Image (cartoon, each protein chain N blue to C red):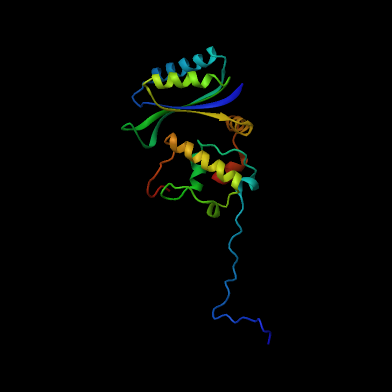
Length: 87
Length: 117
């Protein structure tokens, strides 16, 4: 009986979480346009707050570009600063 | 000669020809100061995401132009003086941005279409 065989009460969760990828690298997008509201909405939640990297899956370089673009579009009233049920 | 992109929000009470004359006025102003306009793209009346000085709609105008770095300061003074303008923003465009705008103008983006579709 292998010493380190661990017995689980419940089955181990088989399905692996979907591998996150940086869409900017994958699709080769170089510039995040602050006027493109539909595209920016993918990176903010219902309250209009920006999603962190661990949820959006972006690499650091493009997360900063997205943050910059979101702030610009908020400044020009394309995106609200705070709201509810934005989507 | 840097590439800049200007976005301006006019008050919604502006009439059509005032809007056109304002556009022309600023484009000539840029020409005088040694810049030239690449593309002008008026969006027209659009509702704002949050009210700006008690108004919930505004007339958007986007102008892409090139010019020396000193032009922005003069432009800013003009915008602050002009009370028809609620808000303005000048952003500097790097080469990716210029290429993006160029592609966006003549023909769409296959990839973006896939994402947005």
